[in-house]
Amino acid sequence: MTDRYAAAGVRLDAAEEAKRRIAELARATRTPLALGKVGAFGGMVRVPAGMRKPVLVLSTDGVGTKVLVAIRAGVHDTIGEDLVNHSVNDVLVHGAAPLAFQDYVATGTLVPEVAAAIVTGVARGCRAHGMVLAGGETAQLPDLYAEGHYDLAGTIVGVVEEDDALHGDRVRPGDVLIGYASNGLHTNGYSLARRIVFDTMKLDLSDPFPDDGRPVAQVLLAVHVSYAAAVMPILPRLHALAHITGGGIPGNLIRVLPEGCEAVVKAGSWSWPAVFRVLMREGRVALAEMRRVFNLGVGMIAVAARSDVEPALAAAQRVGIATWIIGDVNAGPAGVRFAER
Image (cartoon, rainbow, N blue to C red; front, side, top):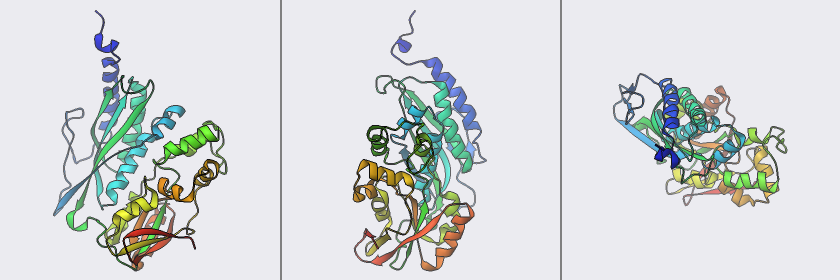
């Protein structure tokens, strides 16, 4: 008898093989805080012992159309690591340490090798942060996704003492803005970047990227930087953190500014990585749009009292992340303004 589900495009045998491979990867991330069985209906994790008033910080996100570059290149593990690092940064800005992660992979036709490669990157990112991959979901949706396409998303759980959580309410006029270097696009702006690189510039993945020299694939698939190692040692002394993702510096820094505080960003205080200069030039993208779409070389911004700037810079230097003093907080209406000089 014909397997009607397989005829509809869903291969249960492929799903079982993918689950087997993913379970092995998940087991390798287990920490003393993990509870329950791998592959259960829900993932379980203990709150670390000794906390007085633990607060769980949750965030859900994806990697956007960067997956289309990964599919085109046939490189599937790095976007899994992208997803974890992006998510770690999103809870880090609240002062939270990563605790547990869950991923979601949806595709038209499930290829166990591809699913395993994606989760290999997720597991690698989890292990790097001492975080358990507590579960996830792999869905076959043949009527929703084109052949060979997939989407990737994840949910992170972090934990922080309630009294130590960052909300932006500590920011004051006179504070200093510290920019932490990105290594490129991270996981934002790919809809525009792909159009410029592949359609306007007519580049292929193996071509050298202008002004950079590395292959296009290497530039576009550079793994989103995690700032946990650079920031966590100095967290208690910071007034706020902003993860610079979609919306750029103005769209994200404003989220941590209280009333009466204006952030003034000195536009010339850091150098853009080559990828942004090329995209602006070849795509004829206006400066204002570049600032709204891309991180422009700054992946995280810390807001700190002037007396805490040097310890923050030193903490980042110890783990090899470049930093710059990129501006100040002034008294004024809440907002972000660029000072061109």
